[in-house]
Structure formats: structure tokens, C-alpha cells
Image (cartoon, rainbow over all chains, first blue to last red; front, side, top):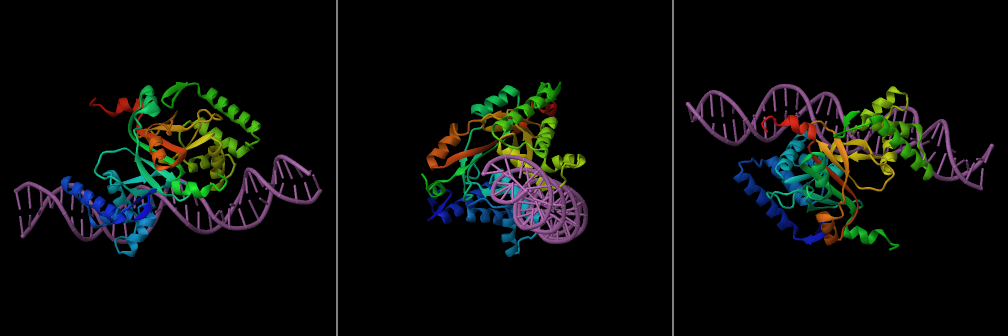
Length: 162
Length: 162
DNA sequence: TTGATAAACGTAACTATATAACATATCAAC
DNA sequence: GTTGATATGTTATATAGTTACGTTTATCAA
């Protein structure tokens, strides 16, 4: 058991489950989960945090699985476009999806101190943003929702004055 | 009158108004609206769209106002940190705030075809995201909310089948 | 099983975005 | 005017992402 993503959980099990879900999805949708793509996803799942493309690339290099930027960017494009991973725009980094295969609009809680990221769910077409879009005639296709703040752990340590 | 930000408006007047508001705010809060900072804000207001830092820098260069990246990044840091401009994470670009000086949580509607950006307002601490934050013990300090889709103009031209 | 086609990969070079570090200048207060 | 803080100028470098092109591998139909 580790403390990851603000919560305790059995990490090895969560990696296995996620990989299995992606494998199934790819089989059913005739997508090629090639060695590079699979390994990039595994790296993201194992670390269980947002990683820069070049950080992932360094790991691949050490394993002889491709050493140039396009290799990792192509794998990430695949993973992101099918919802197996997400890009955190605020960090220029990538993170494995916590529930791959399911349709969802991800939102993220990013800790500004430890850079940990928790994925959650948002309904951006509801609420004020959806209202604004309708009013202006804008059609929302996708949304980036990233909250920055303090995770529970850092919150405790951060304010000795509190 | 131009078509900007999805709507017609008197652009020169909007630039003057915005600059005046920022000037007042800076005077009242003892902030230095130096020539470089002021000019970067003016450039953003005049263009009235999201601009990359290097695009702004090119303009500054042409005017002899500083030619190296740190110049523009420092000016942008100032403008963004005081809410006079915003960074669009999705575009790695910057845009002038449409109502500087007022407390607000900006949200953006970004057209994926013409890259036009409209600023609106969101209440991310309400709704599902706020609920998720409370449930996990995360304290939201700031939020990036950027919807990607089609603006009214591009929507018309984009689907001849519709 | 083979040939055609499309998809994925390997690599080099390059472009774009952003920051570090340090010297100089300017401003504000005493 | 001297001092400390704030802002600027400049060089170099770090980080992020793309283009282009040739090769390999998978898919599928004849």
C-alpha cells in the first residue's frame, strides 16, 4: 500500500487492472497496443504521477525502446487520443487515466507543492461555462479543467501558522 | 467596428478603457506600469487575441523595446500575476483580460479552427469539481478552465453537410 | 503466400517555449 | 546622496514539441 493520488491503494493491483482494461479495449476496437505504447502506459501507471515527455523518454532509453522524442510523443498521442492517458496542460505533462475505456470528461486537482495530481470528473457543459457557450453560440467539444491548490498532505505541512 | 471575440465592438474604445482601468489600478496599488509592461499590455489589447510570447517579443523588437525572451516573459509575469492578462495553457499563449482589476476566475472558449478566444467566467469551486475537492480534502486556489470547440463563425462554415 | 496498402517505428535535424544567471540601471525611502 | 529593492539588458541554456524521410511491420485481399 502506498500513498498516491491523495489516497492509499494497492498500487500493483491498480496497474494490472488498468493494463488489462486497456488490452481488452484495444482488442475489441482493433487498436494496436504495440510494445512502445504499452511500455509508455506502464511507465505512467507505475509512477502514478504526471510525467514530462522527456522524463518518459529517458526511461525508454534505458530500456532500449527508442531514444528520440517522436517515439514518445507518438505513443502519447495514441494513448491520449484513445483516453488511456491525459495531458495536464498546466504542467506540460502526462498522466495515466484512472478509468480507461469509459467515456469521461476528466478534470484534475494539481498540488502546487508536491505536483501530485488527482483525476476527477467535471461536467463543463453544465453550469456557468455551458451557459456562456450557449449564449455566445459556441459549441464545446472538449474541455481542460485543472484546479491548482494544495493536496491534503501538503495542506497540513504548509501552514505552521494555522 | 470589428468582429473580435465572437462579437462586434468598438475596439479602440475598448483598448483605451482597459488601459485606463489598469493605470488606475496600478496607481492605487502602487504597482509600476513601466514602458515595457504597458506596451506588452497594449499589444495584447490591440491584437485582441491570444499571442505567443515570441510573437509579442517580435513586436517589441521592432520598436526597440527589448529583444530577449526574459523581457517579454517578465512583463507577462507581471500582467498575469495582477490579473491584467491571462495565460491560455492550451495554446501556450497570452491574452489581455477583458475586465482587469476585478476579482474573477476566468474561463475561456477557444475555437479550434480560427484560434479565437473568448473570456468568460466560471465558478469551478461550485459543481462537481468543488465537490470532488472537498471530498478529497484538496483546497482549490486557482483553476484553469478552457473549453475547446467551434466559435459561431467557424461553426457555420465548418459543416457544409449540416 | 504473396503482393499491395496502411500503420507504426527509427533517426536526424529543427522549431518553439521558457528559465537561469548575472551585470546594469532605475526608483523609493531614509 | 546613499542604500536597498525593483526593474531591465544580455548571454546562455533548459525544456517541450515538430518536420521530414526512410525503414519496418501489420493487415488484408487476391
